[in-house]
Image (cartoon, rainbow, N blue to C red; front, top):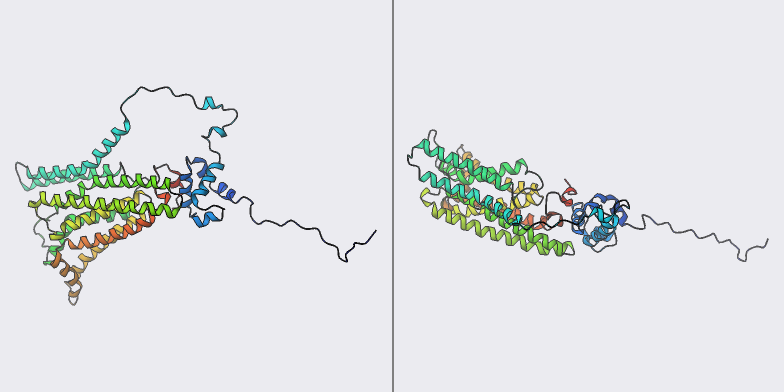
Length: 407
């Protein structure tokens, strides 16, 4: 047995052990297999991955430049049950997909449904105007008859408003809104109708019990009811355009730059419509008076925009942000009333000075105008960040992106 030429024996080289799988995309394939199998296009997979926190930086660890590219590979690699290339051998393609029989031509159902939804959105405003007209046209204007007409009109308007919010672009696909958001929305609307009269009574030392009946802001209530139709139109326009931008974008940064101008345009368009409706309502119903003073129209427009942005955020999957915005406005209005009441106690008179100065300069409606405008601005800033995600623009309630949104 001969010795080796060198003095030391060379051990055989060991293969380098690789840490982790050779194909890192398989991790996502197994983790999100249900998402990939149920998706009808790569966009739904991208929305689900983004909802789970997968960003472009995270996609780089899977050797992809962005989430959209990663979603395209997952869509191509994961078989789906409705894909004819992945049917079982026992199920022939001809038997699985029989030739549909030609249907006789008929009227398009989509046009009828759009007309019906439009009529539903116009119904609250029409009932509000009809209630005012019936109040004026009562033959025997006794207090009991007037109260009966107003109560019936208010009930019908509320029912129509609930029906309109359950159908069309303002429907909450992701479940009902939280109780906090609903309570705050009710408070802001109630304050817009009765809060200005109550604040004026508190500043003058009232209200006296028994005293005069409340003086509601009828023009503001009618303007808010009529603003539901343009709110639905602007929400539909934004959602449709945003989905087109999502389909055409190749990255999250590009998507954000495309969606932000849409949100700003939809908000400005609705602001113009709400301001026009508020102006028209106050001119038409000027005889009823406006307890809010010179800021009644800006206050009504600011509240309409606040409700629009809150509903838009809730519809697209961010009800918590909507609740915070509405709750902030309601809290500011409640604080204003509380400060005026606290100023009646000894040594606490300075607490009510800011509210008194604001009301003296701009009228009682300046309080809801400032509160709703500030809250609406905050919701707009929040929407410019939240509504630029792909998972916020799904076409229906059964979308895969919603099933994979973190709760």
